[in-house]
Length: 215
Ligand code: AMP
Image (cartoon, rainbow, N blue to C red; front, side, top):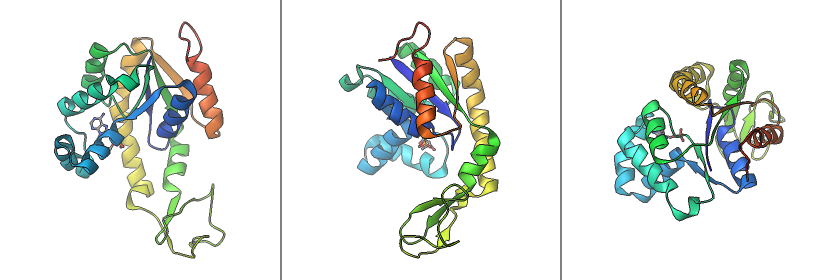
């Protein structure tokens, strides 16, 4: 069983992929994590991938496809896999189709307004790194960390302007993929607003519908 998760930054894709994988006994594979591990371990793959990752651009398809296909062919992936962060373009999607039969593609949908709210509301303690969210989980005293009284700041990629750019980039990247899987009759669109457990439930129910039986 092979399932792909798609979703904009802030949609909760990684969180949901991890929860659903655990619920359905599947292996959660995030391509970004595979690259970060390779960089940490200093492998040949990591050395190749590092310069692209540092610039925030995609690692070339040839390297990425080889890495992911190798990982999902490992024996521990036999029960099935949830792919998170791969494929990112049509070349990758087609290479994946040639190697494995994809069962379903879960696309987690959250309105742009809510994505902006989720992403641009994040503040972090400069001292102990505790994250806060304005207005969802604010500190007791504005600008100060509840744990250590440290100063709160916003990461440069969490400001409204940068977040808007990240979202634009995602929608341009995702549109052809969404179209591709919709035409193949594999796309499941899930409302990603609400609590984490509500959204997880929606996904699990949707995966259990039709001829596809999860688990
Ligand atoms: P992520 O954690 O998904 O944001 O990925 C972190 C970085 O890993 C990206 O900025 C890319 O450089 C690289 N990466 C992850 N997945 C892919 C992919 N499917 N294709 C190409 N590069 C990727």
